[in-house]
Length: 212
Image 1 (cartoon, rainbow, N blue to C red):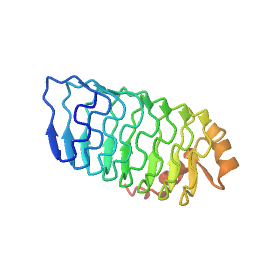
Image 2: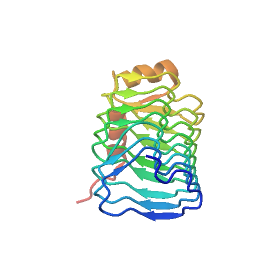
Image 3: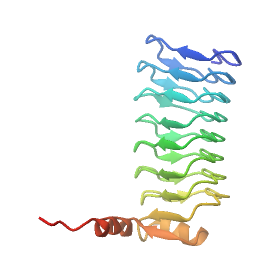
């Protein structure tokens, strides 16, 4: 744990194939670290591993790695995109909080829980699709995502914590299934809910007629 913590002059690191686990706070406060390639041999990444790597722009995570704990990439203000590995079941609390340049994120359909403040203050995030596996969205999960315009919440979600979308000043609609918990939540907290079926129908109606 803390193997490279506070190595403030470290810019690039290549992890060898012999490594199978990255410990807690392994690269915490490596403020000049720009990129890191993690080999497929790594199957376990502990919490706080990349906290405050403020210059980290890209990272390749192993496809089968599990990520435990909390604060995964907290304060990585230059991180622009990331794909969460298949098999991750929970996105920890504060996992991507204050990743202010994060534009896109791919959440696999293995994820069941999105933790408290997981994406709070991701001010560059405009849209996100939550997979059908998710059942719980934690408190303040997307709070202060001031550029978030729409979000698709599947029928699987049965619980949404307080202020989950607090201060999302550009959030104009929540998309979901009619009669779902998402619709109830949207009508209680936001003015607009759009049925997922209506979007599909609109797409079909917008297609040009065949002339064959």
